[in-house]
Length: 458
Image (cartoon, rainbow, N blue to C red; front, top):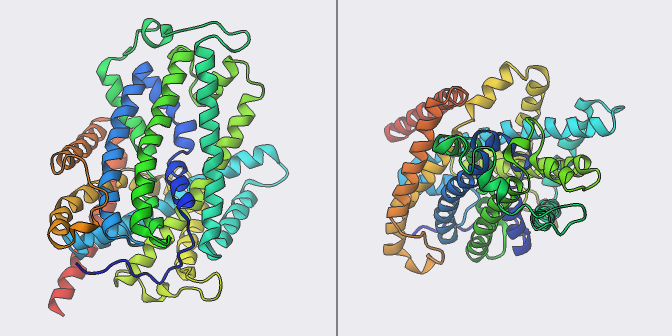
């Protein structure tokens, strides 16, 4: 097979960075705050919703881990798609994922700025955004180990917060904490409509509410290319991440709907805060504000890193301007600084649009990437179907991490992704995201096909 492991990038990330990136990269505001929307539609059945969505994400990550361990590259699934399906696929998924990251980056920067502004009102919200963007731009322009250290400690705090929450929640369930009575499984099964108060329809709606919270795991396979032993490290990181993240997500939801009736959750308020307040943790709201703040900055940092490496990989393959290929030299060398600056420049534009026109221009941009993750996951599955047989023929020794139940579970995953897409089309709130995302995807595919035709004629 053609060697795709040779990269001009530095190898400054260690195994601990990659493992913690896998654990913390997907634990964000979507879990700490957004999970309340899922509980509102599914009740205690949100546990099943998270199991379904988590299983889907876990299968996708296993496939991505298999390919990345066999052929690590900074472009990860974009490189895999190109090798499996053609240049059009690598071009399309690479640019769409880059667009997704730089748009979501604006949401994270703005949300973090709102929290910081609440703490220090004297500093304007736009000034906080500027501070965060400059801070993480500098971190990403420096040696890659700086990014790794930022993410390591950010993720460590998030993981510690969830572990502490799970511990306190279990103590509350059994009535061990002061002024608490054992609740057993009363709130889980016997109150306010039982385990499925809105039936299986509520569970399905819950899946739509939470499935996109698992986006972000893909950055692990992008970062693996900048470790000393990419194949070994990505396999270890994927194995560690998928099970533990599923445990954190499902475990958290199980504690939340067991400690309190699901009807006790309030719209717009983190369910974690509601539970911590109920069991008597002082200043629970401010504690979770700090955790959410860290989660947002962590996601901002990871998205800037992931977007810069994706556009760098596109440039390597002639799918983006060659000027983006220049990397820094010296002791902290191997950093694609022009790719970082290109990504952060569009990130600044996105932030400006979010601050000026959050309900018009930026909303259209956000809708345009709303369902792109499904396209990315779908191409990961399609690429794995094609590449697995090829790797088995040409380099079977590189299959250190294998997809379970191949090819059947890969087909099940594709069917599941298709099912989520159909459900979004039937949901009034999600349908605009599908339509706008389909338009954005279609536009990129047209450009990719035109480039393909020109290349064949040349």
